[in-house]
Length: 270
Image (cartoon, rainbow, N blue to C red):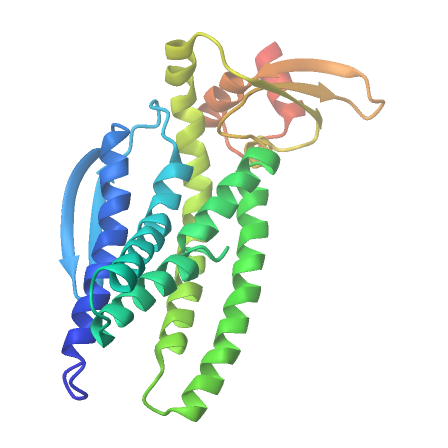
């Protein structure tokens, strides 16, 4: 911006990004999330919320509103410039930057909005851990494609390394979010009891495990939006014991996550 006199372009891009992030923030507040702080960076806004896992939040709406706001702004500006205002390069660039920002953020790549929507949809079908694994694979594949396009772009124009910069950010975020997914599922499971008591009714899911399975492994197969009943079978496929999800969580805090169901059953029988 400074060396090539792109101040106007930067300001239009900053306004588009601010509209995008402000839309996320406003919809989050409207759904009851408590806003702790908002920071302004050279590339937009960053908001910090205090999470309340007992409260039902429509994260799909929060994620989708950012790209939709940019697409809506680009449409409104296009109509204004076509029918009411004289055409100008600045308005054309502002339309283009909003359109690009809206479309790019809908790509199913973490940590983009489209990637989070894709992961949330998978989570409702296959659970948190499998959803993260599949969305991570898709993100890496598309990230590699962006890397190839970025290298071609950089080869044709030595000063344009934007896609390479974005690609590096994508792979960094994929690695960072991987360490968070296990803790996120634990938080959802712990707070589920409060949500259950508040609602009075909750969707359930049954899991059948062999008795030599570890307690820590069963957590990876639990969904945050289901209450689980676990049936434990022996090697002859006969029912040994039935546990509720809360019993598993209580025993995880009491014993080691490496403990098998067989060992747990012996402990509870003594």
